[in-house]
Length: 135
Image (cartoon, rainbow, N blue to C red; front, side):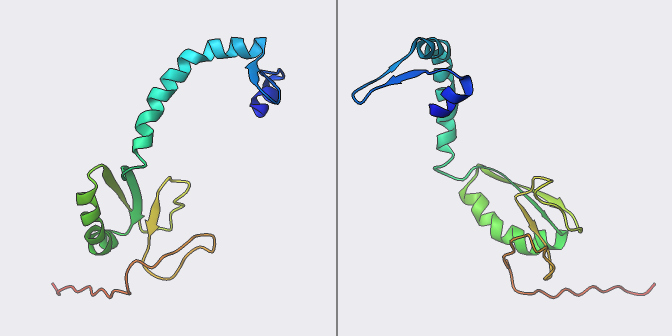
């Protein structure tokens, strides 16, 4: 309240050691915003339900091989248990600025990590063989 009063440049509450009451300006403000407080409360209600169980979209950028061999096997049980969680994969082979592109995570193969990033190993080193047949 002190911050709001400072921002508005007017006292909204009269405070004593025994009580708190609205000033004339405070009463006018309360009368104006009270109907909207009910609307805000109605909007906030469903949001508090989100803290009870995981929900929403998880955006991940990764190589296609990493998605199929590492991420999907680990995410499928989670997605079965939490049907309100969705995964949006973006296949990308470059080092993407995950914050600027609003990804929740970026998964890469190898040890190259920008010094400002937090890295967690998801799987032991995995070899991959690529073969082709002549002609």
